[in-house]
Length: 257
Image (cartoon, rainbow, N blue to C red; front, side, top):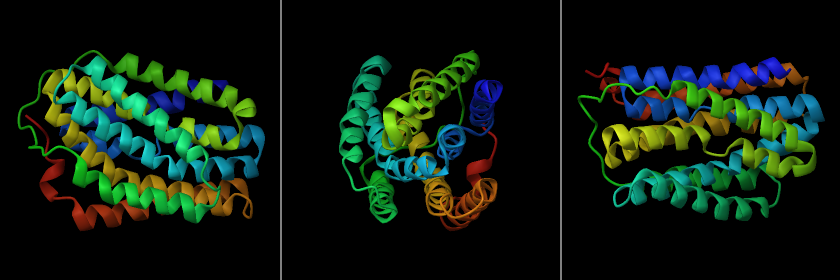
């Protein structure tokens, strides 16, 4: 299990990073919205503490979409005025405030889903206006840092799950680790408005995130563990295909120069 914790999430982070360098900040944000960090963390927590524990954590993860987006909006607006350390502090502070509010919500899937959908609809309206970047700066050597950070978060949350409880395990599993790392390095390399472009892509990816955790929350207490997980992955893929077909322009996946 330890080997999986140290490898699965970092490899996902590496894939998102390389895709972003190939296709740009918007696609990096889109892929960063998938449950590539929170998903494995919640699965590890459920394996160690039971499917019922995991189901409650999954409900918290759905509502935590609001925290991810509040972090992103706060970082984006702060980055238009200040450097990345200040913008990071603003984003994390906003996330902490929202996380405590989310922890006090009733642990019902419908409440979590309503909070998530409302935040997904609102976030694009309050992000700064952006223009996609045509030429990108040379890739920085941040990939090992991103992978190491993902591994540490996975170890920390799964180790603390028993004392944190189901709700905070789910909320911390959705701590914006990918969003933070992508935001900082995009900000440094390409400027503040490309961070907002990245987060617009992430909003689209988070629809599949919500579908994945909703299926886990509903099925883990009722269906065999791995079958529920397979159905959750399928639901996430289907929802993302619909979102792509409805709102994602074909030119988004063109390689950057």
